[in-house]
Image (cartoon, rainbow, N blue to C red; front, side, top):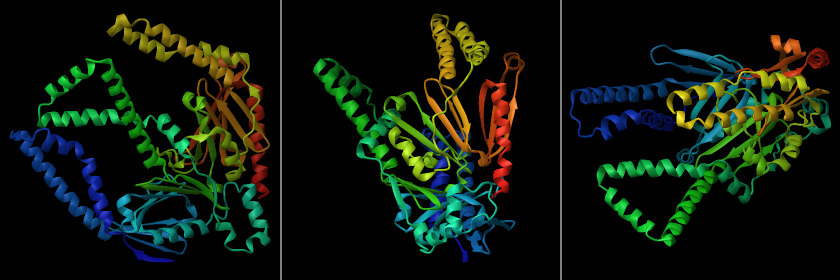
Length: 494
């Protein structure tokens, strides 16, 4: 039990910073770009904006003082509301993911931000504690870990072994000892800086900086003079190019290091922990039993450099749009399988051997290339001289379809489902039969003629995750449905 508490007063400062970040466009428009404008419209805009800011600042303070949290009887209770008091209760046993965010200025006060995610789809499915003491955050995470759901959708083999092995549980601390599985090397971080294209972030900074300086002082003549001086000698051109590349690479490496520095993947018997960041630290933890599926992705460049992005599909992972749920976006491919075997043995990676029939290629080639048609129409309407782009796009479209057909593989053996798709890139989806809450098949008229079908799987995450495999033989789709029906036997035996 944790008695009633408020978030740290730094939450007020953090909210104010967010308020001004969200209002930056209006600030620039009203007070920077039109600094000397005294028109009626600008004056009214400034008055309305300043009134809004003052009211919002007052509400931020009141909201902070009126919002309290309490943990008792296995639930976290939230009391909030300025004009109308509300109380929400969320069972700790429903919490699936825990994300820590610790900006550098939070560390000065020994506080952090905690995000607790459940699998429900209601407005109260996520609890955000924006500024709490680190020791309190640790207590909350420990309580959330202890309150596990008694009846789960599928308890993996690892959990069953833990429940039946009393001799292992004699040592109460053994299940909480973390094992470090992966720490990227400096070479990995250097490669990641190129793969993330973070060095391109220097370009908008230079453009914005130049634009702002130009408003204060006239630097066009100085820039033209410097450009003429550099272009006067090939030696100066080479030096300028080298300096520009060095600055861009240095910027990219620094940005990547600040984001992915101190990266660490660890686990105990129950949870997986991912930590990263130098200035702003981020941590993500999830119970192993709450991982619904995994996705392995290789872009063409990552494939060339032998890297794989391994994503954990769980509650909230698809709505956040944040790569914190990725094991590591630039994981060496030779380490990916071994790491997954250690962390999530319930999702064994195996070589999917089933290929698509030739009829699948026929139907893919027959499908209307809408992108090519629309692009060609726009080119002919606006830029006829760019006609050569149309055949290039046509060829690219059909080559992509051919290679996607060639590379697609699928299998469902034992308790594991695995789909491999992609043409130039590669995407592998792996899940467990017990984690799939629904399967269904679809058939178009053309697919019926060719004896093909599309199978779909649904995993319970937030929002629900749909995965499909197109144009497999009808017999295989029937086999898949029959195989999935055995799921009821697995659930009954638990």
